Amino acid sequence: MKHEELTAEIIQIFYKVYNSLGYGFLERVYENALSIEFRKAGLNFKNQVPIKVFYKDEIVGEYVTDFVIDEKVVVEIKATLGLGVPDESQLLNYLRCTRKEVGLLLNFGKKAEVKRKVFSNVNEKQE
Image (cartoon, rainbow, N blue to C red; front, side, top):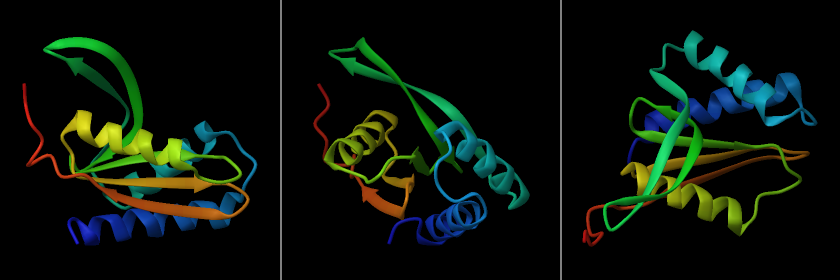
């Protein structure tokens, strides 16, 4: 799998934070805790990364993803009862817009959830 070692390390850190804090906090709390653990692990990361959506070379939307790790993996965190199709679609759209191929959706809900998504930008038609 692409970036398997890196995603395994990120997931391990996610469970470390989840097991310590549990569920019920706002996403920002989990983001701050993940930042501490990413830094301690020596990972190269950016948080609150702006994403621009283009249509025919014009910006038509702007979003922010929670993390980009090592310029390879997009990480989006949630603190909901459960992940759904809209959450997965959001991550796939972030991958497409950032030209990254691997993303993780981490849910700090009542039950810890991890979804790994891969999006190949190689065959995407550019107009």
